[in-house]
View 1 (cartoon, rainbow, N blue to C red):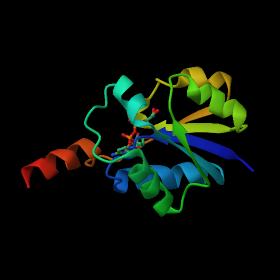
View 2 (spheres, helix red, strand yellow):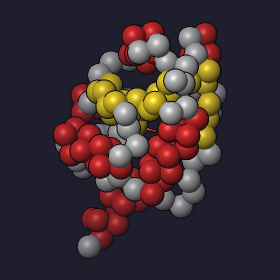
View 3 (cartoon, rainbow, N blue to C red):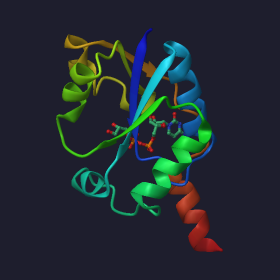
Length: 130
Ligand code: C2G
């Protein structure tokens, strides 16, 4: 079976995330989702994540699209995961286009079109207005 891996924060899970996960799953059949640990997000400049790691994992689990959920904790983990789980395809939204080309050495890299008009940051700022 073709194994696909994708990563993300999935804060306040929304339609854009779900569409990404649906298309990621459709690329293969077995989908591994890496959810970012809070400390890892801080190191990459994501400082205003609203939900805890457990809440974000539960939201991804609730979609029913992930066959396996792992936690992404450090820079460089993607290469380790691709090797550990014998991954065939790495995929992520097109907002990252080009950024993960280096993974082509380990598996196929696919950028899926980002869903326009929705983002966790927008939802967070809407919350502040209420
Ligand atoms: N996404 C999307 N459309 C949106 C918003 C997000 O397709 N409107 C996709 C992103 O491109 C990503 C996934 O949904 O593939 C998760 O998005 P985020 O939670 O914002 O996570 P991100 O910071 O993109 O983490 O190691 C982490 C990864 O590199 C990506």
